[in-house]
Amino acid sequence: MLDVHDMVGKFVDIPSRYASHEELAAVHTPSYIQLIAGTAGQAYYSLDPDTETTADSYDTAKLAVGGVCNAIDAVVAGEVRNAFALIRPPGHHAHKDEAAGFCIFNNVAVGARYAIRKHNMHRILIVDWDLHHGDGTQSIFYDDPQVLYFSTHQYPYYPGSGAVSETGRGQGNGYTVNVPLSAGADDAVYLKIYKSILEPLAMAFKPDMVLLSAGFDIYFQDPLGGMKVTPQGFANLTRVLMDIAEQCCSDRLVAVLEGGYHVTGLAKSVKAVLLEMRGETRVTEAQIQQTLSEADHSRDALISRVIQQLEPMWMVF
Image (cartoon, rainbow, N blue to C red; front, side, top):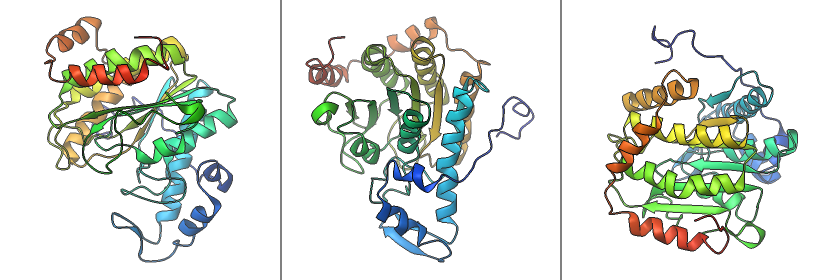
C-alpha cells in the first residue's frame, strides 16, 4: 500500500533501532527480559498458548519498541507533526512479566514511560481501539495517574478483562476507562463513544502526548472480530484524536500498530488513518455530525453506565 504510486513520497521514514535494556526495564521485569533474550537463536520457544518465538523474535521485538521510541522523539523534536509506528509484533497484551496474545514487549507502554522519562512529560493518554482489550497495558498503569488508558473492545471476548467496573486502583483510580462492546458496533457507535466519553475526559486530563494502540481487527470483515468499522470510520476516530492532540499537546500523536487480520482491510484502513494524519483528507464537523446522527440508541445505556462509573472521579459529564 505504501509503495503504490498515490502514496509514494508522501511520508517521512523514521528509522527504527533496538530498544535498550533500560528502556524495556521501565515496564518489564528483569527476569522477563532475560527470558525473552534467552530465546534468541532458538528455532522455537512457546511463551503461552498463543505466543511463540523463533530465532529472530527477540531482536524483532526490540526493534518494534525502539521504533515507537524513535517515533516519539521525531514528534517531540518537531521533525514530523505526528507518526505511525508500523511495527510487529503487537504489544498491548504483554504484561510486566509475561507474554500473551502474540505480544512480547508492550510497545505502547514502553513508549509512554519513555515519553515521561526522556521528555519530562507528566500526562500520557493511551487510546486503544483494538478489538481485544489491552489487558497488559491496563495492568501496567492500573495505579498510575500519569497515564489515562481508554479502551473500546469486544466483550466478552479474549482476554476476558475490560469490564466497566475496572477503573484503576489507588492513585490511579479513574485513570482506566473501559467501554466493553458486544459485537456489531459500527462507525457511528464508535464515534459516539469517542465524542461522548473520550473527548470530555481528554480535555480535562490535558495530555502531553496522545498514543494510539491502533488495532484494525474491528474492521468489518476481520476474521477474528464481530465489529463493523470501515476505513472511513477509522478516519473519523483519527480526526477526534487529532483534535484532542491539537487542543492539548501541540498535535503530538503517535499511533502504534496492534492487531488486524484481514490483510486487504488492514491496508485500506491504515491508509485512511495515514491520509487523515497527514491532512490530505480531513473529516469535517459536518461529517462528524452526520455520522453521529446515524448512531442507533442500543449502546446509550452502556455509555451512561461508563459515565456514571467515572463521575465520582471526573466532573466533566
